[in-house]
Length: 86
Image (tube, rainbow, N blue to C red; front, side, top):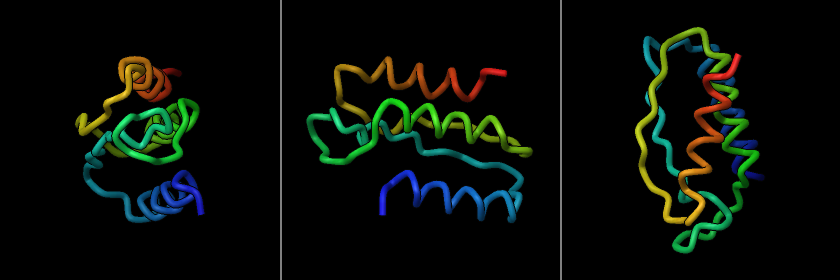
């Protein structure tokens, strides 16, 4: 099972639950190019996560957790751009 699939299943449950607020722990250390962690997420996955947040019908906020790749600023930009695009 891929990380994105697990996140998508969790998001579907959130849509059903409809919390008052979703606080996202935005950890970019899950990026496949991160030098400290061996995970499999790609730039497109972070864009997908941002797009999912855009579709929520309840408030959400994100807190930066981790990420040690030289591409961190680009990953954050992809995530936030997908979240805020219309």
